Length: 451
Image 1 (cartoon, rainbow, N blue to C red):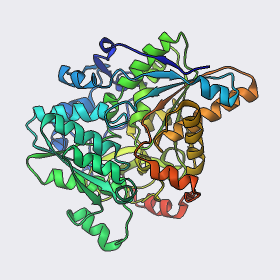
Image 2 (image 1 turned 180 degrees about the vertical axis):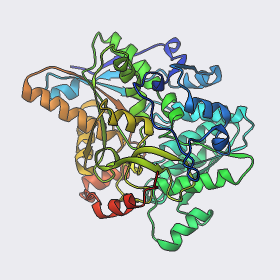
Image 3 (image 1 turned 180 degrees about the horizontal axis):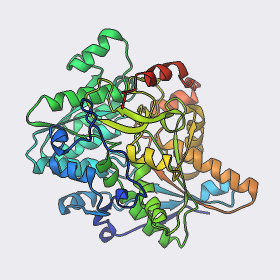
């Protein structure tokens, strides 16, 4: 029983991104200015983003046209394949039908270029000379570095210290594309210096790295900031994943009963899930949708749905999201792309109105699932993607126990070829499960802004 691949043609690359804000039964809460506590306007965001991205951030149009120069670059790896994992089904002895959308064929090995390319394109159009950003596992940083190289823009990346040390090859890839990479927290910014003064041995966090990147952008006339997750326009760009998946499920002559994605900030999850959720919101039916996060950084399952800062130094506007508190620093588990204190406001909103289920897994369970998948399907997933794999396996095993056949689709958002040290450490018994830091999170939540 072989894996079955569903391939689209180049002409099937979507011509429009899908915007779920057009179909929400009630709008998500507005973004607020941290000083006035009033909704922000385009001028408030202009120091960080070009106007085209700002307009996408607030748009309620269902379809937003993908510029042809962006589609030209998408053609290097899109449309991405979908597979039916028959060997995994056989290994699990399950009646479930398991499908996965594979985003690991992009040049950097993940879904992140889907938004890096348009962000670089719009910044180039606006005359921006340099982009700053943060990165955890390095997938976003390497994607933006590649996109900036395509458009002739300088790229400066603040990489979370623990990932900077754990993932030297990701750092090397960013530098190969011409980016400058700095371990965060650093002595290059006021935000970094203040953290190091209090915590000299800080392992860093995405919140801290965001503060450093935002500070640099906000204080430089020729520089803007780019974010790889969380924001509405980022989730919009990732919708190409779900739009292609719908076509491929039609090719498979199957529907989707259960849809799964790992979640850190929400980009790959939203990418595959939002087009399906949109159909459901329009009354056309849809699957059960499951967001999977790490137990050591469980913003959806343990966090508070409240207004919070997106960064540690409180330089960003306030967004209403599931949060563990902007000062929370997660432990140094290997799924670096999921180590963010908050969840995308749109993902948080959909969870709050009951359109999304959320679960969490510990680190060791996800690595076991990743190896099981690799031995069945031949692809070694990124540590982040292992969370989706673990949930798909669990749902397939439930089908076996209950004697029912369901269709399961998950997003395999990237490969783990740059994460071999993590797998080596797992096989050697060096990885541990981190306890949910209840006291630390309680302290971080106690500092939530009053709105």
